[in-house]
Image (cartoon, rainbow, N blue to C red; front, side, top):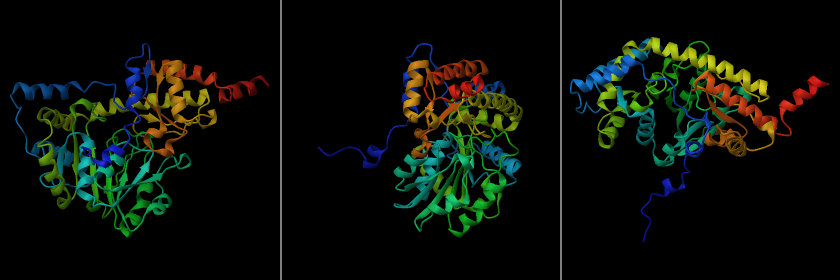
Length: 399
C-alpha cells in the first residue's frame, strides 16, 4: 500500500514546545513558565461586545475578508500607529489568528524552490509553513552580541539569486528582541537591491518597552513589498478568540483572500465584533497590561542575573532568553532536569532553531508571585550544578 501522506509533512518535526506542557499538566505542584499566552482576562468591554453580538443573533458568516467595520478599524489603527494607509476594502483581511495569515501568505507567494530567509531563534511556524508551501527555509542565525537583532551583514550573507521572501519576526518570540528604527532603515536598501518581499509578523508590536515600535512598512517603498501581519491574541489577551489580520498591496492580498475563501470561508463572527470594540476602545487595556509585563520583565532579568545566569535585556514581547552555556549542558538537558528535579517548565532554545542551543525561553506572562516561586526553584537547581556561577560568586565573596 502506498503512503497516504505528503513527504514534506512527515519530514517536519513536531513542535519542541508542546511536549513539556504535556508533562506539566500531569505533574503535581509543577510551575510552567513556558506558555506564550497572556495571563490576563480579555477586557470586559471586549467580552461584553462579543456577548452582545450573540444576544443580537449575529451568528452568520461575514464576508470572506471580514466585517467591513473591523477592516476599517484595522486600517485606522495602522495609520494611527505607523502613518501608513491601507484600503480596508481591498488591502485588509481578517484571518484565524496571525498564524493563518503566515501560512496563506507563504502558500500564495512562494514557487517551488524559492528561498525564505528566516531569522532565528524565532517562532516555530515559519519553517514548516515555508516547507509546506514548497519553499526552502534558510535560517539566519542571530547572535546575543547583537541583542538578537537582524544586522545588514547577517542578511547579506544569506541572500542568493533564489531568495524571494524575508521574514521579519520582531518583536521576537523567543528572544524578546526588537528592531529599532535605525536597525530597520539599514535593511531597506538591501531588500530593494535584491528585489525581496517581506513578511512582517508584528503580533507583539504593542508589547515593547523601549521607545516606540517601528515597522518596515513605514519606510518609502516597503509598504508595496510587505505582507503585514498582526492580531489580537497578545495585545488584547484574546488568544482563544483566534483572530488576526493581514494587510498587503491589492495584487498580493487578492490571491491570499482567494485561498482563504476556499480553505476557511471567514474568521469567527463573534470574535470579529469583539475585535472592533478592542481596536476602538482598548488602548488603556494595552497600556495597563504592558506596564505589568514591564514590571515582570525587569524583575525576571535582575533575578536571573542574581542567580548567575547571563541574560541580555529584552525590550519586546513577554519572554527572556537567558544563556545556560556556562553550566556545561545542552538546552534540552537543562530543561528536562529542571522539570524533573524542581518541577519548573521552561522551553529549550533549540525549539526555535538550532542557534537557540545554549539558551532557554522563559515567559513572564505570569503573576509576580508565580515568577518569584519559580525563580527560587531555578536558583535551587542552579546551586546544585558543580560549575555554577552561583558558587563562583559565593567563593569570591568569601575570599
